[in-house]
Length: 466
Image (tube, rainbow, N blue to C red; front, side, top):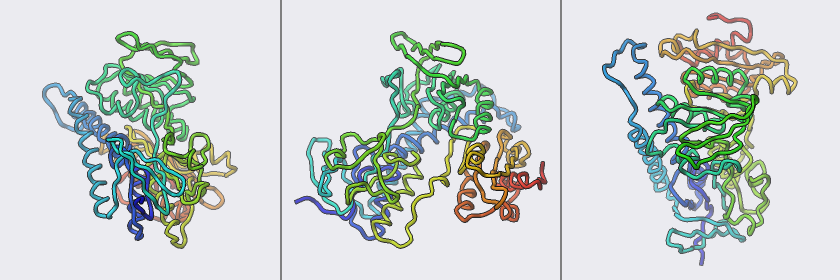
């Protein structure tokens, strides 16, 4: 007789464990299946440990430029790469233990092993010893996440050609690295390694780095990375990697012809693919499209009783998106009133390099393409008292409003601590706040957040501090 639950969640990342907790809160008997470590990629190999690495890199930057803050350090400062990696892993481990505590607190059964969904609202879980147990649930939520995309021309060998998991657990700091792709993963690792002394080259297929961001953001980040010593090749493609020598020889097709680079490590950071293989989708009849599980607005698949959330579905591959989808999915299952579909045009994106990037809504180009008559305001952080005092005057805050109604169409930030202020825009857009209301909202001084008001003033021709 199979063990029976109201809800079983396959995967314990920020989508899976949030779904399990919310289901338990709503009175459902819940289990979660995990093949590796609780917390998934985000807590163990993604969001959290990368931020620990970035903080170490940032601290080293502070030390190198301590005289700018009136502090003299005798002797040479240098990173202890092994200790940096160890700290990062320690942070990840502590967060994973935190999820373990949350599972116990919410009386959620944790089933360790490889899960495979089956027809009839069942799931097999095979443990590390090869023993398989069958479980049954009224509702099964698939939250298997994603993994690094492997490029056909650049096979990952885990030594000379690596992906993000290996990049945060190398035992030795490489002298040179070529990063393929300049999305969040690519530029974050580029900053970590370049700031600690590795010679970094970025190769991006699109015409500019961080290509999903507003064009002005891309230009600003490129300018700052070039100052850091990072070489950037856009509209370029890695066609071949020869790993037979001591150094890998990387062949890159650029607008100026083919170039070759001899590097110690190649980091493939060309996006994410869904983990949907060998989890029973075909046998259960669950439909997929373009490598993702297809769902409706409440994350129901085409098969009754089966749901999918997070990176294995079509939405943005972001931890906070997975968590939000989890809550919507579970609350709909529970029959709560007023459960609304996600507005995917109001999802904030954050990149934690230095300078940080945060954005939400339409870019300037997209707003124009959508037919809006727009007002655009920018406030340079070189005019921000808080940024200047922090020694970080690089970057700007940019806001976009609809000229006719004042609707807040988008916001695009690059600079010191800007990931901490983007939520103001998300909440304001959710509440249909207009630019005029932002002008009247008192912002604290000195803060980075007041730059939002300054940029809004600029959009409406009322700039005080410019």
